[in-house]
Length: 120
View 1: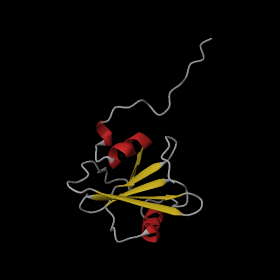
View 2: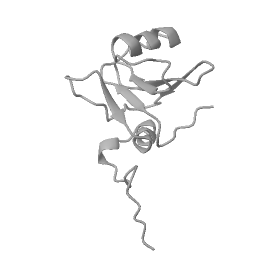
View 3: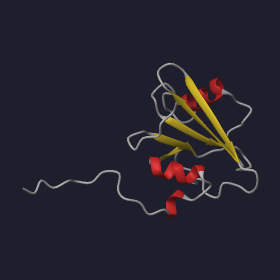
């Protein structure tokens, strides 16, 4: 089971990917295009060319997980467009918004980490 925790590193590939690729093909994209180790435990998120489907790839120390969400109508409205980088990092709550076909950049949420003052 994949649990998306706030401490999890999540990378979204900027360029679209051929969705005929399976685990091995996506792992190769992680290594060659994103310059990241697919065995690192990071969750990798990919989008198809039309923007109607996303795939996630993760390694859990025993094997790879691959998941796909295809929208029945419409497209994923948000996708990073920075052409200078191969990937964009997301926080866990932003991934949940993305999976719900929302825009993670417009969501207001509490910071992932904040200093706790020791007032006694």
